[in-house]
Amino acid sequence: MNTQFKKGILEMCILSIISKKDMYGFEVIDKLSSEIDVNENTVYPILRRLTSQGLFDTYVEQTNIGAPRKYYQITTLGIEKLQSYEIEWRSFLSGVFKILGGNHEN
Amino acid sequence: MKTDFLNKLKEKLVEYKASNKDIDEILSDYDQLYDDALNSGKTEEEILRVLGSPESIIYDLRDTLQTKKERNIKNKIISVMPFLSLIIFFILGFYKDLWHPGWLVFLSIPVSAILLQTRLKEGIISLMPFISVIAFLILGWGWGLWNVGWLVFLSIPIVAILLKTSIKKVPVAISPFVAVITFFILGFFYNLWDPAWLIFFIIPMIGILYSKNIVKIIIFELAFIIAIGYYLYTGYIGSSLIHGRFLMFLLPLAVGLLYGDIKFMYGDFKGPQKKKAITMFLISLIALAIFIALGVFLDGWQWAWQVFLFIPMAAILLFDRFRLTAIMPFIAVILFFSLGYFFHLFNISWLAFLLIPITAIIENA
Image (cartoon, rainbow over the protein chains, first blue to last red):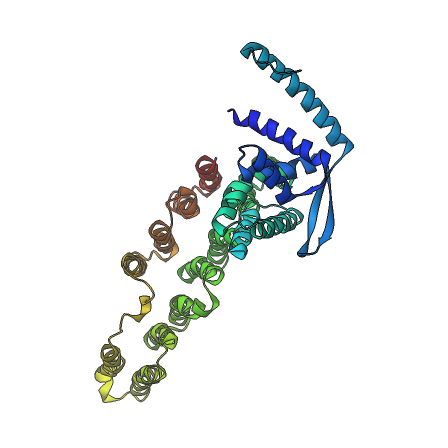
């Protein structure tokens, strides 16, 4: 698949899982790679880029295993971005399924 | 493993000229990621795959690093420099009729490129040819010191050694240059060529100090001191033994042969490295011989020093990956000086220095 295309999907997935629950870096990698086939080492750079674009906030929380952890939390800007991604993606998918003739409920 | 990974990552980030804030943040994040991955039961190998290599990390992170601005400003300064220099050159020329030393402003083009595009140490090393040539011209034009002024060019390897060699090895690495400088200064100014050549013995005398065998060090140093002392003493009293006084140098030679390590000067090198070291040594000797021959027979003291520029060039060609950018400063100095000196073209021969940024841009872009 086209790398740029894949990166866009990954960005959307990361936005989506963090919109459900604040997460720390490795948790995001773990969650994503358990669901989809993803090149794990691209996740942190995406997290960092989305944070620098203001789509995530970060905060630090103490843990019981040692060093404090950095958590990522979605911002309003992030939610808006996620929504526009979702609309785009769903309409794209429904078009694809229409062409393929599958029974995708949408 | 983790420390290795983080150190390498830091190195790459510094190389990329990332801001300190970014470096601290990224290192702390990867520190956590590494710990978390380790706690999840992954092996070190798996972790490296999950986190990626430092090189690929930098590549993926490059659009989030705060370096672009700083780099852009630097690149802008470098790009604007030729125009600025031209304007200043014309102003100095037309209004103050300072065409002659005015061309020196063009040196700001390579100098600014070197200062802004390389790290401090490399920058200083690359600037030494310029500083040397200017110092040489000032000594020559100002005081007519062409015959000893070329010694300033030895500052090129000396500075490189001081900045690049581990402190422990600096004395032995620098001793040949100290010896050459002392020898020529004593010779030219006080006509003490004869005993002054003894100064070259500091090279093996310092070199042997790196031996771990104390007895050997003491025997060696004593042999040298006795030989030198005997030589000086017989010379001083004008003894009839004057022709035999060199014989005493057989003593340190014998000690060297006894220990089987007359070769200790390049004892650190092995295999092909050793060959290169010998080649360098021979090139240096040949350069010195050519220089002295040109000086003595053609009275070429003013220009023959240029043969010494072939020594660092040979070193770069032998020990480094071949890059024209690295040897261009030396070629430029030779072109600049030779065209200026032999054809009286100093007013335009400075253009040779423009070859430095040109090759740098062509080779790196």
